[in-house]
Image (cartoon, rainbow, N blue to C red):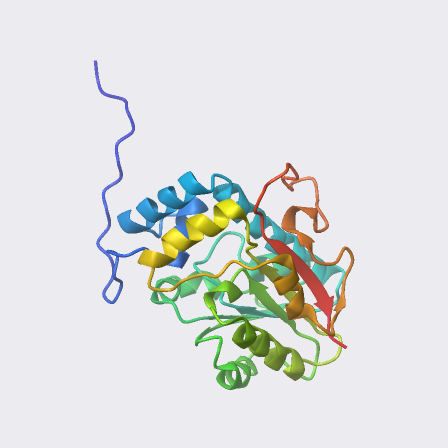
Amino acid sequence: MSDTSPKPRPERRPPPGIDASVPHAARVWDYWKGGKDNYAADRQAGDAYAAAAPGIVRAVHASRDWLRRAVRWTVAEGGVDQLLDIGAGIPTEPNVHEIAQDIDAGARVVYVDHDPMVLLHVGALLDSTPEGATDYLDADMRDTDRLLTEAARTLDFSRPVALVFSDVLGHIPDLSEAYALVRRLVGAAAPGSLLVLSHAVMSPQGAAAQDDYNKSAPIPYMLRTPEQIAGFFDGIGLVDPGLVPMPDWRPDPNTDTQPLPGVGWGAVARIS
């Protein structure tokens, strides 16, 4: 009888400049999403995290689903057809420009990241409609002056722009620095722009798992309380339903609304 048990997939050789021997946040995230751009160290770290915080895989999918709904609302109801996706991560179908251009073919999207793994797949982020446009900036999100200058090649900052931070601000350990980064970009945005922001939330299981992960990861990630996340929106008018657990933000028939301890929180706010 032939052996029909699943065979482990062969490990791919990492591209030059990629250290696959230590876990990397974007690749662990990719593993949890069911992607292929990850290595043994990432899967080992992801499995250890999931053992300590069993809801993490559902939480990752809830985050991506929130981003889909938030981008759709931004273009279809929020009236903003330009998006700056800061800390975009490894491409995932559907990508932000695909969601936006499905509603408005002329939508324009600029992705920002400085992860070599993202740069390897940049082609997936540049496949724009003829009517619209996309671009990718290989830049650190902390370098806001450069970010705004180079994004202006594609986006018109005299018009409203959606500033998208999808679960990336935890990579800035200092909360005051993270607040300052967001405020600098909000201050540069035209009236009527939107802040589209989600963040992983503190929970007892998640905190322990994150602490263990951060000990071996070169780029740590900070979980934050809902009150700390709310600080990113100080002085900006939240769109209904406000800052809530991601599955509770304008759910649609595809949204997993089953209780999920430790799921991140998200909101969209209008910049005046």
